Image 1 (spheres, rainbow, N blue to C red):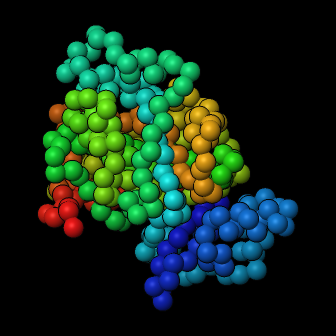
Image 2: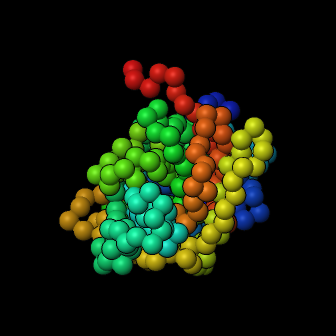
Length: 297
């Protein structure tokens, strides 16, 4: 069972459930967290709660492709994990050493360390949803999307569901100096999530998500990469345990879990590019790339 948010015919944000058959059922709750809370109050699982709710209603006469989708959850905070895949470690080493692939760096150390890399990525105001523009920085010449599986958790670190995330990154800024990581990762519209959240109970094996990233330029496929969460170095519970350690998080926090798909080293995003990130059983997150003419207000 997947959960989405969309604009209805009255331009009102509406929560909805999508069945395995693709039927869309509007839900009365304001958002996923309210749905989870009501399920807990009735002492039933979120999946059962949704199934009971939609059994009493009819689906709308539209498919999800016909809807104006919003971010599936307005997460107060989005966090991210780095160097959780071997491919990510190799790419970070390439950036940090100017292409000296035989060099050993702190990225090798973090890949093997007990403590993972976890950093703050975005706020609700900086996060965009399906069909919205992601921005590229004006002071970077080497920018890429980072397709990732996102974990939606509550304040206790319990996994509520999984979504798709795009952790937009500036490879040249991070490669110049690791202390520049916040600038390489966070700016306006530098994070997108969606199009849906698949409830945790509906996922048989979270370490078997197929991930595909496609980048189009002038309607031509320029980059395509594939990966699977089985390639993860770390488990999701491990990443969450470090995120919540001595830290207060909020219900509906999203934790991006790292990328295993890196475009070729000679590739950078340009204004007008189109990004598609597909994760099996969740959907396809589509965003256009824009270089704003006036970023400062």
